[in-house]
Length: 460
Image 1 (cartoon, helix red, strand yellow):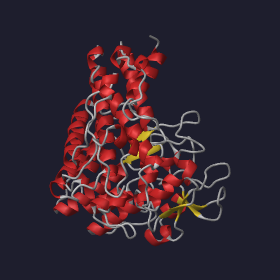
Image 2 (image 1 turned 180 degrees about the vertical axis):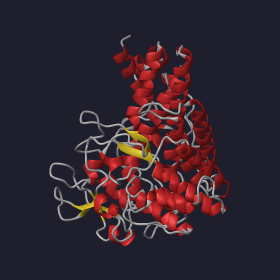
Image 3 (image 1 turned 120 degrees about the vertical axis):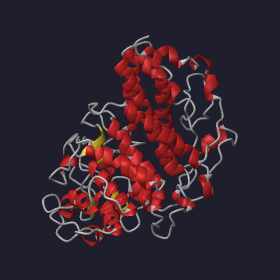
Image 4 (image 1 turned 45 degrees about the horizontal axis):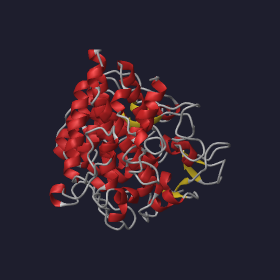
């Protein structure tokens, strides 16, 4: 079987459970080929991992929705949705319906990436090269771990909202779906605590398997960086501190002198892991893509996400370069309004996690724990805000509020705001951190296809 046909088959079986708007279990018998038979060589398994990275970079995941929709959920006082698409409009208004298209796409594509990872993990015996086998196992666990993490943050009440975290999370998938029989299995949602346990297990093991350097693919430090986010959501500050400190002390990453460099250039030393894009392969230039929705430049962008005009001046220090470098008055679609300058090109890479976040995490955890592991909070904050990089200086003796405030403005429009608001138990507009309407609906077709084994979230 040619490799192209093998990957087409794997794409089918990866989506066997979570498919299109048709009934999930409408599968023709001729399509129930065991996907395991499509993998025969080291390169086949490696190609499937590459395919999983491609899914992560699609518009339904990190290419757009995991970043933009998270911004829109926490948009009050920061940005507004001005586009015609109803799904993001519902998200920004906290008025999602159970058939919200973005919610359905995130769910479907995340589980597609998870299933591809599970197929890889089930096919490792095929890989003869020991080093490659270790790397591919680590990458598959990394992808599976971060996808379960993104899903549980969006489709379950936040960690800590219920005693023991027994609130429903998402379906944990650790077995591949490769046959029609697999597709007919009906698995209920696990609790938030169970999902977090699985995520930590996957990412911890991934960090032990992944190399320190891996080109543009996931590394040991990318896994640890995601673990810092997991631990912060749990308020496990000692663990978050240890993981962030390991990433920083690795010496592989450093802040760029210019605040624009990490967005204008690809794979700079500031970026721990980013989505790779170019002119031919990107999340989209019309109906998907960060620049598509955020930019208002001649020939670039729909200008659908508008920054509240007063937000930059009211939140950044006076004269801070991030005001002029990260925000601008639009000259393309919907001119004359304020837009985020981080996303200006269809072909730019999309930084998902940066070393700036690790410095801010280490500073926050050290302040909470009254410690100075790695550096003092003042020194870490100064790595992010200083006269060279931002034309502003950090407080000499920063408080926790100083560090948290810096986190919000440094990571603005990178998909982190709603998750920080929820872990800090802060409201967005009139919606409390644990409001049902900040939780995405389980796609209704999945509820229907499982005959109610999957339980819908409250309010839908």
